[in-house]
Image (tube, rainbow, N blue to C red; front, side, top):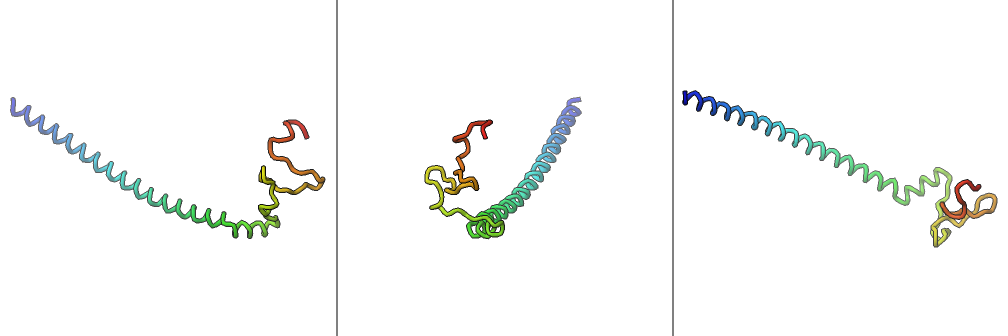
Length: 107
């Protein structure tokens, strides 16, 4: 009777070991897949950052501004305090900074 109990306990321990090993292998496989996806995502991010730097570079902005027929405002043509352009609208009124001068509902 004792020998049957010992065999039963050893069988249970063996099965538990096999189940734990199976889960460990599955977790390792998932970690590997996630690491591979992380590398791919970093490559995509690197490409997007390079593209963003290219698009935001001053020569590219100038070209797009010329294509859109808009003029870039030189630093000396900006208000020193607000950074807004020192230009007037067609009515001859200087544009105001957002949130200044007018209240909600006024036109």
